[in-house]
Length: 354
Image 1: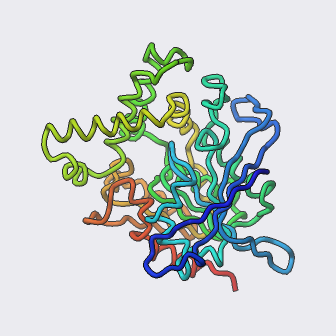
Image 2: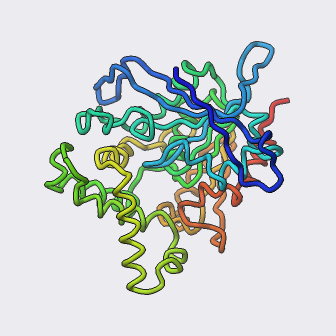
């Protein structure tokens, strides 16, 4: 495996460079990975980053591993930002890298892991959340030798993966923290906006069944839907307070987004939630679980009542909805760790091993 080391610069006053955690990047290759669709990829590459060092108990078992799972179209690198890493990974913080072994993978179809834009385009195997979670598990167990995690946590899609981890591998973790997600199928408005993005590409002649030579026109609609869904209306109005400003801000966002995103990758990213249905298996979750959403999340709005209803089926489960405030940022509150890191600290303390 090829490793490269980076220095994570934490946005914390008074933290010396010598104290900043080192981030190591690597690839784990799973040979002949079989997807639930029946398709097989000869070499599935799982890219990941780690901070900290694995610590083993007397039996040789790693006991301090944490996996953090990203959202749709994201990567593990997003958790190196000041608003996340700067609040969690530094000295004395809830996930201090001097104490924990933190793993930040890129999921199938995302970042530097295997994805359609590597060359297969629309012939890339159809993957779902179940495939993604299974690949994460194999990365941890086969690639890194971790059979029990101190914590599994994730944001948005990664939060949904966290619900699946708890029931697919119930003995594999001490605690679970899904953020900005619901323990139910993606339906209603959440499914509708995703369908708008999917259809904008699949029905676009310039998509050419994945063999386009320039970004398909439907990418504009995809980017516009992401702009709508990713923040709260108060912030968006502040950013775009007039008709002219709204048009300008939206056009600038779309132009920038299209320059860096790949249409096939995005199409797969949106479609892969087709097999997400954690509700039937909620009673199989045995690790303490703390689910955190925000009241201004228009993707997972609290008025649906889903989280509050289904959390009752989780043994040791607790649901927290952060109230709307000047500090919350809608769905993106999941990565603004200052909003919820005290709850994370509480969960870690409550599940600490004697």
